[in-house]
Image (cartoon, rainbow, N blue to C red; front, side, top):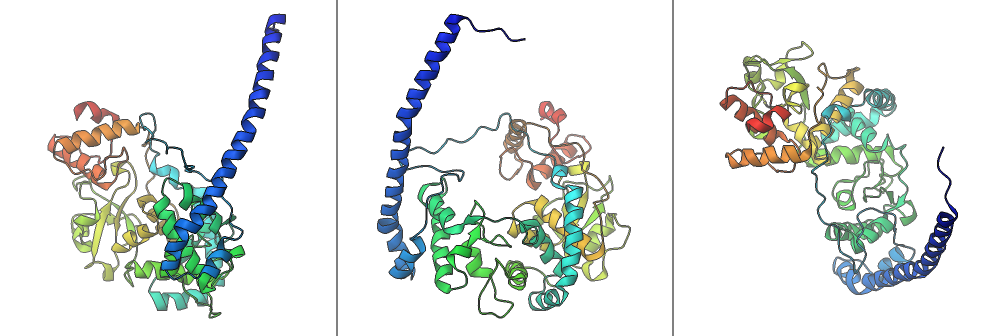
Length: 422
């Protein structure tokens, strides 16, 4: 049971409550005035700063005024820096842990997406055949990205995109980026592809079912249903074809797979990872690397280049990937994202399942410890890529090389017992 406050305590509580109420009343008009001032500055910024740039890019004054007639600042967005305030300093990562790669691959989620994806692949089979013929990208890859980005168009994408982009262009930590996207959005509206009321996106400015930024829309969105509009919000054919066109323009190799889960023998170094160390898949096979499925590598892949990928070092599934894996990364620059898409596409195409090997219990080190390891390796002449406390492929293979050079069996992944040794 908690102690009851004394009479003096009650009096102090009452006084504190009264002071808090007065401060709240005093602060509210100031806050309202501050927001009102910012809104006024925003309107002035539109006219004196953004309008000349939009005009120079080919936007008419009539279109500009119509586009911003109902636009409002969205104060609920993250990373905002109001005029007259300073952006937050760099956040220290001394106590942050990076996540285990395995946390990314929810089996329940993958199974659910695969079941729906197979059904929608059948439903849109004719469209997907035409897309593959046109762009060379397999239907299951396109459907997998569709599912991952927007739940096959079923996810709520609620934000008016002009509000998001205008807010972030005016007062965010990445104003220049969003300014470019805002100008691009004006050109989308000018094209007549979509009405402003239907131009919805995420809080980060990505639009529609494929989650394209406006600049990507202008480069890669296509009208595949023949209605004269590029509609990535409501048209399934336009959505799927736009994803395929994006991948094709980024360099998708027609007829090639994304990659294969493999077993790498203990006598084959895991420190051979990375797109810059590609060699023919037949050569990887001659080193003793085998597919985890037990099947041989496809004959039409054997002479083509493949790259080793070990996202958890020796503590998880291992892969030989093709250049198409790195094309998928163009959609989202993450090894785990590309593996998720590849695995989901395999499930949609042939009923495949989870990777044969599970990810080990890794990812519990502090980012500051990994950063210390990276800087130590750099000091010894190793290329770790970006020293940021996250173990990318250059960090992983540098660890493997250091281990081999110091008589330790390479694991190619940061471990606590390496900190003192390094």
